Image (cartoon, rainbow, N blue to C red):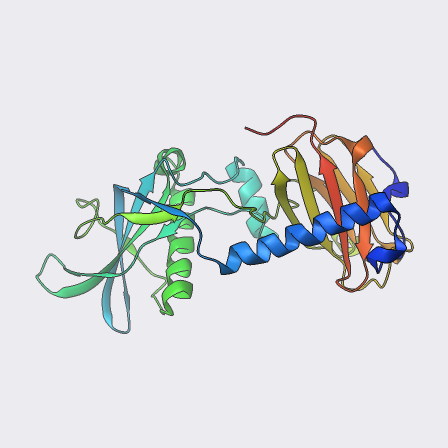
Length: 290
């Protein structure tokens, strides 16, 4: 693993850096700008036709609500973790696991009694859906996340109690949906995929927030939020082939992140941005992810 000499202490202005470090800082700043632009600009999209899966019934203050859980191979799959690993994340109130979903627009329908209701189509990855069919735990988790996603997107308040329809895979008709057709730099929180239990809970320092994204096919960038620090003094960084370890002064922070990519630790570089109080790391990859 690389040692803390990777850190360039007390970096604040590009003009104070050497030429190589300045290029690195400019690259990170440009990547951050591109991320912000990607979040505010309309992404390129393509239409998909989700396939029916199962339908759940719940309600809101305005009446009955049905959620059609659908699937499509065009939706990216979530991280491949076991149910035991996922349970541990949830028990520790960690947010590292994401289930990519496409949340469709509401459409008015009639239920079995001919009464008006509202239906939503929520699509997940097809391979993940097949895995979910054999797991009550994953099915309940997907419905919960879908419900919360619909609440956030459409300012709803849905009843957390729901019932899966036995003889109906969907209600109404499943419409096409638009999803991104081109991958943009996508922030992922990967530090929670694997965290060794080397410290007892009562001794554990704070785990900082980690943003990771691919700036290029062979370059992984990271931003680590360290709001309690004014500079890099006492900050340590170790980078292995698939490991990123950050330690803060006086046990303020500790991050031990497993990264499922092969990192060229010898060529990796880091800088501390004082204004944003972030540690920024550029990690060339030994092999390009598929």
